[in-house]
Image (cartoon, rainbow, N blue to C red):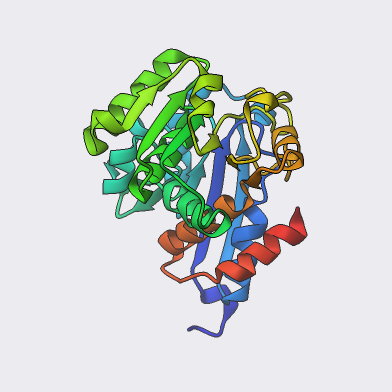
Length: 287
């Protein structure tokens, strides 16, 4: 490695999304890079804060590429909106139908999805030993696509999908059926009934995160035998997670998913294997 810090490559990264001022991505990437002797600058491009309309997304991507950015992370509401503006998709991103990581490489914009493997790694560690025969998932947005794909790939026998917009549930069902077969995925409008016949609940909506108060499901629908996986990490414990744990449910929150997906993206950007334990420590200290 070149010992002159100013002559080392500079990894310019950004996060594109709405309402992302609470994101810990800058700390995660910059501190891991510093630990490895790399140079990294990570910016938050919050469309809400800057007053940008969603249709400025292609313009922003153009600007990042022209400015020499290594890549960018993409979050709500752009994980699917970004796809038409990319040149290539990784096989997994194509199968999932959502992108959270974009590489500017050799004049091309290449979309990846690290949410899926990030979620499953966290799920496998945090809910080891739990039954996954029948699972209910609420939320069929960009994160929901990655999580649902990961659950089925991980061995869930039957996944029941619900979204406040039924069209989104059916769209996700069709996407998943191409890879896992129609018999393993269904859409439900009766979440209470679905939970009565399930092992656990995956919460993949924004409801409960800072700025989006509320409960995505009625707590009375959960029983102590259920497990809960919530993708939200700000706050660390949503109202749903608090009440589920109080009822005796085993629950995990979104912090581990964030760290593991960031670690995978870090390696895509830099070619250097990250220390996930170190990144997790940074996340816990920064939050």
